[in-house]
Image (cartoon, rainbow, N blue to C red; front, side, top):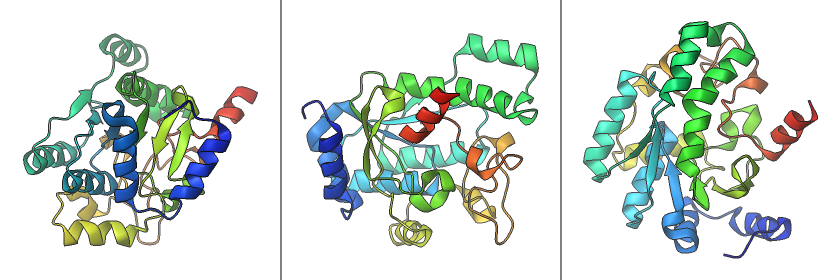
Length: 248
């Protein structure tokens, strides 16, 4: 694929607006081959994508960001997926020196103290490792869905990721409802995180994730002490977020 332009991306967004997840993953494999990678945090959406990848016979590399503070159930899901799909995950961990410096200067729970501290922790444990995971890639795949949060409304199935050197970002499940995700998991006997059965629709690091109460938004258990519009860790900044940051 030639260097993308705003017009060419708009055409792709229109082309894939009604496309299935399978169609988008096949297209990504044809266009980018080994320069495409799939992000997996072992949430419900990500294991669906793992299963679709397997059924399509794709060799797309899959990476995992191991923050060092994941739930035991998340690691167990990783083990079961390794066995089910016979796959070696590319695992990226935080930079040791930066992490040691943070804990030495601010302690292990500084993220509870302020929004800036929380972003700093996410930056070290997730954002910087993601940069390494995407280094040299031309495209990546996520399990983001539009109804997950107010920060993801209007999410296209294909976009340019300005936060990561303008590479392509593919969101094949963008228009899926939660029921579709779980119907797929049950129909295909897909391994999933046991925490989902305990009231955790969205799962991140253990200290930053809690079960939600009936009627709460699915991401209410992530960074529950913050406002809804702040509930992103920096992995999925959109163009509008970047413009707001630069304007500050």
